[in-house]
Image 1: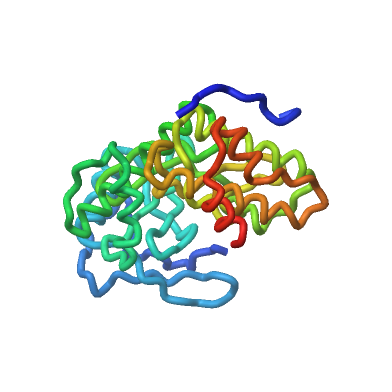
Image 2: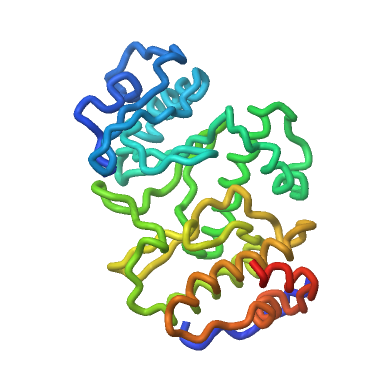
Length: 293
């Protein structure tokens, strides 16, 4: 891969009910923890609708969380920040600062679709073929990717701890609310933000040697007050020499261009962006296919 540097662009509620987690709260004061799987439900108040959310707490996960509490990694596990097909993220009050606890689902049904992101990564040549073994590797992969990004000052939540299917990282937001996704944010300076995000995509590739592989307005958090963004959800991110890295990078660039195209700003062609990032020309057939999406 050509690593020659190129010039940068110019100028660079959920609110839990009072008894939420009454059986799932992990506090130092708790002496006896009920680990029966039939109680794996949390009642959460969201958008004024009370709904039951199936959680990711199997017996081993609970024990690991208790161990983290006893070690002082976190103080407790609070309300849900987000829920998804692969993982749930929880707010964790801690000293000196709050943390986010991401717990990947051991019973995830889409793990076969996740395998190509692992199998082409030489950092994880060997992993247990079981579902739980794969999810453990997937969790460690996100931790390692966040480490790479943090070292090179690429905006992201800082990784703090990882064990089995649990990732502890920096919490981005206030106690009242996590930062919104880019798609839900008010953007006052779209041209500036577009260029800065593209510079981060370049740094991700050239410095961290990574391709996000799922970058879009859904996987970027935005602090409107500070005009600062953060790239998140990097468990699927691959090394730049991954067999599908070119396809993933082109797709990322297309997603960001598509989102910013709604603003009255100049959008750089994907081919130009790709060469600016990699110093290579993209595959024309692959470029054509991506551009149609």
